[in-house]
Amino acid sequence: MAPAPSSTSSAITLNINGEKHHLPIDHRTTLLDALRERLDLTGTKKGCDQGQCGACTVLVDQRRVVSCLSLAVAAEGREITTIEGVAEGDELHPVQQAFLDLDGYQCGYCTPGQICSAIAVIEEHAAGWPSAVTDDPGPDAGPPPLTPEEIRERMSGNLCRCGAYVSIVQAVARAAGERPAGERPAGNHAAEGQAAGKHTAEEAAA
Image 1 (cartoon, one colour):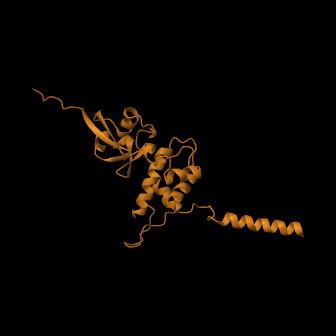
Image 2 (cartoon, helix red, strand yellow):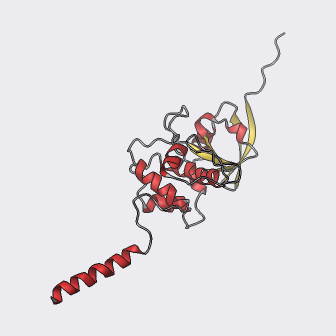
Image 3 (tube, rainbow, N blue to C red):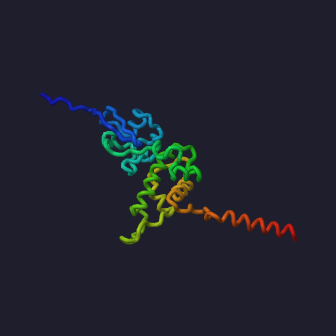
């Protein structure tokens, strides 16, 4: 006699954005489908569904994962953060604010995944994790500079079909505390304005 087939579903508890969600779920269900179809957390987007575009990126224990390739049952007992849980009440996360200020989006479909990935990138960089383009600075040199090249490499798993990459790189740099390439240092605008005004007044008096 053949053995009875094992169960293909389980009752699990997912800790998402600080809240516990209890649900029975098929073992084959991805974390992405559980978020969108079972829990109505639709901020996480389904793009390629093959782990290639990054639109479905979420944070699991503060590490970025593509939720379309992650099983929901594997996330039980771990801390999951989606785009809905990034802000603190009405106060945007610094990465969200930087994307807003620097137009780091166009259609916005990839933006939730871009933001979640950027949050992890900043944490990875602060922890001293190298990327494929990081020069070897030695064991005691601290984190490498978060240059545009570093940001592009670290964010390369998140695609933007609208092509907003320049603004995305600037937004990540801003959120990480680095001045975006091409942006003048704070305080120069007022000084330049005063100089221009003085020059105009002198011309008018001549």
